Every structure is written in C-alpha cells, then in structure tokens.
Length: 86
Image 1 (spheres, rainbow, N blue to C red):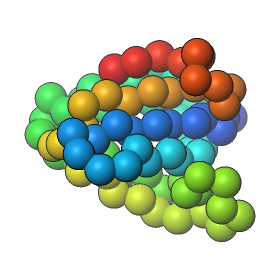
Image 2: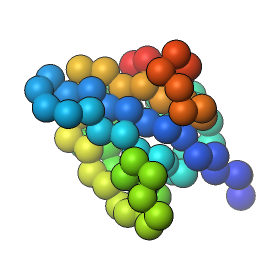
Image 3: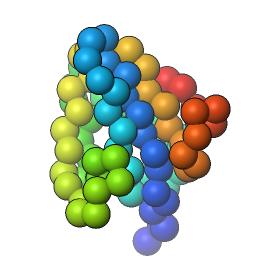
Image 4: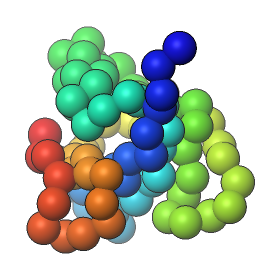
C-alpha cells in the first residue's frame, strides 16, 4: 500500500469564500491534480474521503462541486507562494 501525504487544497469559487482543505486521499500533488482534472473532464464532483476543514481536528468525507470553481491550489506546504495551479 502506498503512503498517503497530507496536501493543502485551496478551492477558489466564482463567488463566495475560498475553501481550504487538508486532504490525505492522494500520494502526491500530481495524483491530486490528475483526479481533479478527471472530475472536471467528466463534469462530476470531486469526492474526498479523508479531508479536514481548515485545521479542524476531525476528518470528514467531502464532496466538492467543481462547476463553479475557478482555480485550485495544491501544495504540501501552507504558503501563498507554493503549490500547483489547475
């Protein structure tokens, strides 16, 4: 079994506040980008099973409707200047 890493995922919707999640569903940033790209291509929501809302202690399953998301930042470090954009 591969090791999952904790990623910081920031979703920027068309309107409203940004959503920041800590997620352990993926093995790398590239793995996360590919999953998001597939969901966008297939016009479906992104399902995360091991996510935390902005530093909460408990994990949740989260479904992100990507229909109104303008950009996504994915990083292993919590910084405004790091991470891949989709």
